[in-house]
Image (tube, rainbow, N blue to C red; front, side, top):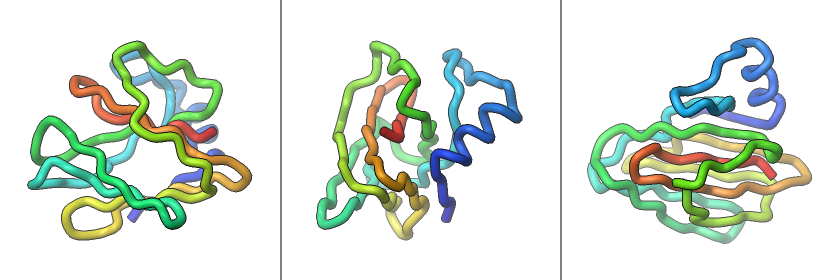
Length: 118
């Protein structure tokens, strides 16, 4: 399981000086693997699923609040909770922590998932 917080995203951006294939900075990570094309998210008492258009591995990009969201991404959920757990078919794959903030989850069928720390 990976743990991500805003400091990790900023350190990665500073040290890597790289952008992904779409010109975005952020912290790329494996969301998990799903045979049912869906991932489960939990924040506080809220539990919800985000479907993806294919089975198998899904990548995500954790980004900071000042990052522009490309037009092809659709807002799936805004969360005002300081932590977010992500599960694939079998286990918890990520724990995102944002003390004093929340998250916005975006999805694009062609480009994957963005998780913005707000």
